[in-house]
Length: 521
Image 1 (spheres, rainbow, N blue to C red):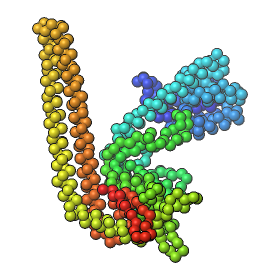
Image 2 (cartoon, rainbow, N blue to C red; image 1 turned 90 degrees about the horizontal axis):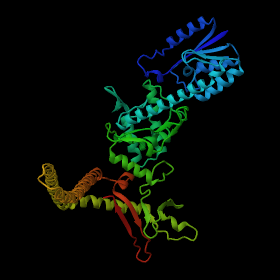
Image 3 (cartoon, one colour; image 1 turned 120 degrees about the vertical axis):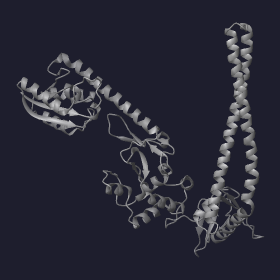
């Protein structure tokens, strides 16, 4: 009788349930099975061995080689230490132990759990073993998922590869440090997009400068990183798009992008943003929050690029004063550029053209922005400091004092309740008197608690309002200081200062036209 020995070991065997469990090492399995085969006087045809493969994996190379040889009947018996070494998948148990092996006249024997397909009364035992083995693996899979999710929620990076622009902290492999070699590339990409360049244009610039793609860069560092479906030698739109939308660059750790369909399958399903685990401020940012959210705002506006990949100055900023429809850019045969209401072009147009020349609008907006900058340096900042800040400061002091007084009153009520209870226990206060006084104290305490909670909430809202006001003021100062000496209008300036512009219909008699600018601050 010829016997095929099969041994398998995987990471699922690292933790033994009992301290006295026998080692599952490959060498141990081989020695045990060889000795058993010799005792039975079976000729050993071949030893098949899979290391670092799960018992649920149907793509084990040596396992599949064994199945191929079994089909050709190169041996008579398959010998394993346990049934679970052969497989932990109930479907494979049924397919081979109870069907194919019988069809091929192959006997299956496992040493420790006494499985033997030659014993027909042993079938139920084999099926129960199969179910128990599969349940074990299912539970193990769930435990591993919970452990990983717990680490993710703690802000620990557990991925095999780190995000482009970062590297592992050598002192703590679950923390990230900025990779100075490529961090400037991230800043460059964000700056290009903020300045009005489209994603296609950015790819062209990166490729022209021969900047290594994230995949090529990782491979140049010796990492076994693969990116299927893209030419890794050239920057793609999807790569740039992912970078521009990635919160990792403002210091937020984002993990759980995808998950396996099942512990039995290797197929991966992408998860929506709502299902991903995000922990804020876990590492040093490469991009400021201000720039990041500004870029996201541009993304949401879905601005259309010109043929050269650039965005015109007023992209997605112009709306009709009368119907609210967006204005789009046009050009006549003479090369004259202007904007016109989309509704005027529809069949049975519901609005008029509201046309305004590109150069005229450029000059008007340029002057208005310069006026705003000048006004800021003359009096706007003084107004903010003298009136708004002082008013909030008085409210803040009053709420703090009210909270302090309510906290003291609550403390006194708690002391009174405690003293009342002690007097009741000592017999100094009758039961009926205790009940009345206690009910009164508790009612008063409940009212004070509600009032205290409201004061704390009002105080928190005021602090948040003050912080937001401070943030807006800081951003306002930053924007104005950045562009105070600008020579020529560009997309970045318009996007920083202006929320949207309403364009009215031109009055043919007076040749006047309403242009209302809605500012960001």
